[in-house]
Length: 122
Image 1 (tube, rainbow, N blue to C red):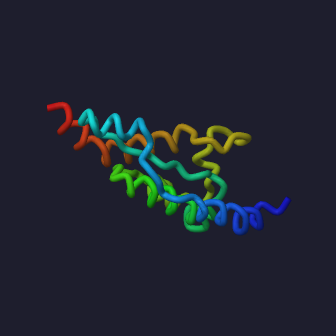
Image 2: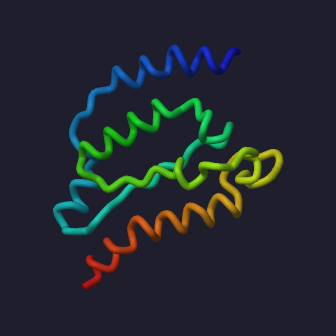
């Protein structure tokens, strides 16, 4: 199966067909309780971020969550500059985030959300 044909054809049509509707019930409960919430979006480590084939999907997800007024962190920028994306993998056979990817994610999460956490704890 040609994955790029599938990604460039079928998936975008399905994503565009999904309307932005009501916010998720958990988000509604958190908002009503005054509890800040945020969303972190990890990229799929298939290729370097300058050639990332799923940019369109990230933009759609971010647009949807931001429409709910949710603070979003897109981690694509944290992984920019890695020519060999495998440096971020858990191991040579597993493209899930590994130690380096988790460290970079943790740093980005703290930078983005720490002010919110400090404000909400007072």
